[in-house]
Image (cartoon, rainbow, N blue to C red; front, top):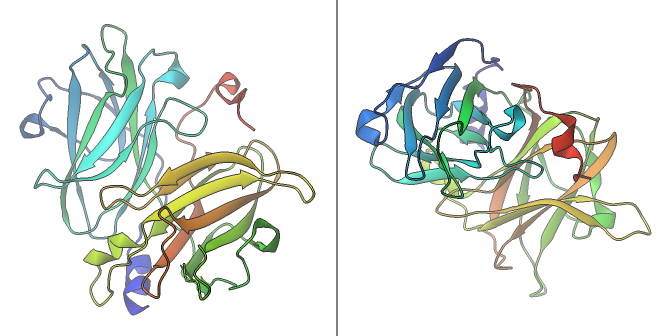
Length: 294
């Protein structure tokens, strides 16, 4: 728990993106990556094989919020983001968000160093006019209070209402051999953008804390008592990257989050920290993008 509070106190405050630069070719490989800082970088995926690389220095536990603006600006680009360590190990990736082809990603640096951002076409289509704007900003959880989950939260009907922001420590553990899930409810308002982020296997890099064995799954629901739940978004852990969901509330009211192991495994080492906090809106998003969202 001490390491957790160290993590929190090092988080920077929210900084909206201001300055705007243009990508500098060639930047098709990590070796030629453009160095960037907080702000906006305009670029183009000029061919089907094109990829743009950028690099940024981050302190240990620094939070970087990346947001691609392509579809929202009328571009045909279906963008994707990947983040790599300096040893070329991929540690984070995001394609679509729950309502848009434009990816968003919140990244927590596991150590001091330079990290590489790769922007490319998820569907392999590029060309003239396949433009994008990469927004880079910092974010903050906004609270240092860590609260333990209520153990009686195995069903959506048992979910307690939690504030935004919240930091919750929980355990996927079952005494009867059945799979375990933890449900939480969060009250939001229309237009509020919130990240739901699990910190489990990433604890491998935190001094004094053993890594969790949780292979996490996050599922976000809309639900009312007496009605079936509706899945709004889902994300699984992969390649040592814990799952996260970034969601914009489409109406006032509570949404429900399920934390589980994607293989339905449980145990005393299947613990997690759940971070829920608001993100800044870095650019305008047309209402038409949300027409098919709940």
